[in-house]
Length: 446
Image 1 (cartoon, rainbow, N blue to C red):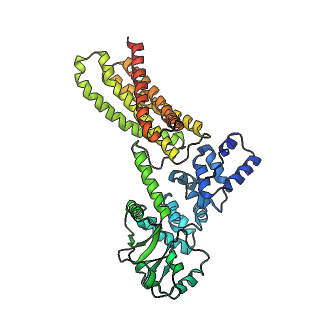
Image 2 (image 1 turned 45 degrees about the vertical axis):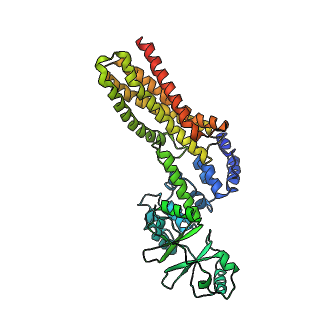
Image 3 (image 1 turned 90 degrees about the vertical axis):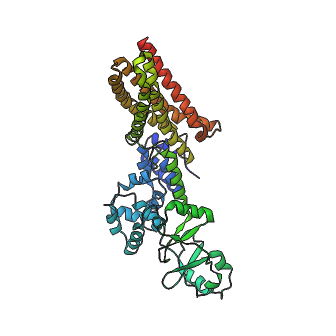
């Protein structure tokens, strides 16, 4: 991968016409996937500047490689005609993936701006659910009849300016488009010109039903080492094909979902999304955790009548530790995912740390106030409310810093952050939570 790590530094140092021209030249000399990667590792304040510098002729190829949240951010700034122009020439399945990020009311506007042929192809795929084989398939396929010769097939292929990407097989169909089998490119090139397609085609191929869910499609590709596969309807009529690049996207999305769901985060989470977007998302899951922590502490408080004020501290300690653990896990998960995707660089780690600390401050203040009010009512003790509120704020800010810095340190020590990060982070947040809580209690109450 060739990505200029100095682009962000150039933007930070000031923007003038010479700098923009230099960045434009550097950016557009990269391959579209590398441009997309550069956009994803760039903080939001510079991201739109870079996007405006991308050559319009390749912007469609770039945007299809971006994460859903960043795609939507760019798409929301375009009208229907601009989206239609940008997606012109892309495979149908890639166009559909982009359109599915738009609000439903905008999609007709984009379709109307397309050519009739492109619109019909896209509308066909849009009728199927996004998480099915129909939502993944590309309708652009090359089909042949079983009764023609290899020589005829070769002459037929020469009429195309180019064949679809990732074409490893031609699909053999009847006159009614019933799927009969595959003819591999390798078999086509090595067979005698007078041989018929029927003699050399593979009839053992298992076509994929258009309604099969995407995770099952991925499993089938993995099990049979497929590069492409035909998609058929209930009558076994060929509708399109699915290629390995789409299946890889499904696998990555499923892995993202599994990883981020453990921390209560959306699988569309952008590593460098703004504080305004990030803080409320984290706050919701922290609120859920607060409820469970209060329930756990309530069980201990059954014995409240026989306990003095020091024991009340023991009842409340799990709340501070638990909230810090969840806040740290959220940050840790996002940073480890960013590392896995190659998004964390020396050029952006300081920005990420600042952002995560600001999120910790926001949620720390929010839940310090909320928990302080709850404790004040629960124990009728203003000092106790102040103590736990301050401890909560300190622990959530410390958790944000630890969750950002810890994976970087572990990676520099050649230790897998995904394996060791959560254990160490839990220890850090527990120690900070207990020390801050009990230390404040000792200062105020003793």
